[in-house]
Image 1: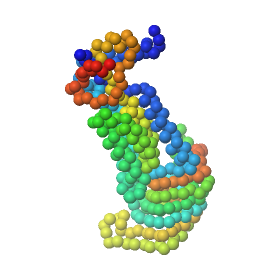
Image 2: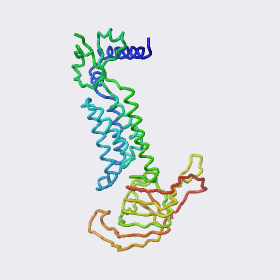
Image 3: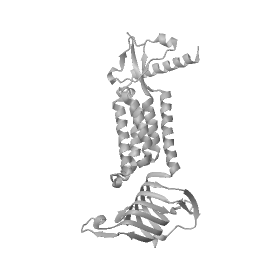
Image 4: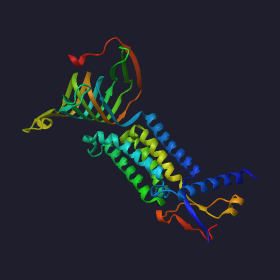
Length: 170
Length: 196
């Protein structure tokens, strides 16, 4: 048996295990499963850190043309992107790319939340970009034996309809 | 008919590619700033008194207003606020004396050997010892209870020489520190100019 097939089987077993866990999971875990939860959480956390410095300097932050104002703007936008990633997970790649871009630029005007905010923003953005939904077929013994991977795609489903019909999809 | 479940997970390849891209972008920005010695929105404060000395400062758009602010020992201390729109400082030296747990004193120095260019300077000072020269100086008084608007000084340009300023808060929208050096030295006793 080749290495690739071995890895695919391991991966499939892992997915099945997670599937089993999710079948018994509560509402929150199901909600978490359907969106880039950790990516969005890190993004929100990074936004709060980026916003910290401009909010400390609020007295001068609203002076037009001030770099602090730019920091406030970037921090606010990152916060919005983090919240949107929870609500619209299907656009998580776009949100992730913009989050990384804004986090890096927030070094200007907000010192990137003492740089910790920038680093958290990059990690959170990368997690949003890397996030995807993967279908696991309950009766995919054939695929299992062939080491065939389930199809990767970014899909959004309502929490209640996590069980999907995959007839003819593989 | 088959039934399955969609599981949300993070694709490692995509994640690491995006992470690498982000850090390359950050490195590029840091390299660009490092090469020019430019920092944006640099605040320095909340650590008590520190000293700013320089040989000469040439600035435009000068404003001098009364201010009450936080120092290392008090929440509200009387001080003056200097605002300069554009300034070039020669031989800038910023230092802060710190007492170590062992009882010894150390001085943290930030020096710039080449002229430092600053935009949007805001400085809260408690003590100023310098030679000042103004162009088009105007002193205004207003009949108001608001102490910060009661009186103020404005000048189109200012030249300050041989200055020693006890500062509590410093903010620059943009600063270009050329030839900057940061060093720490042992000292016998702290600077007490502020107590004079």
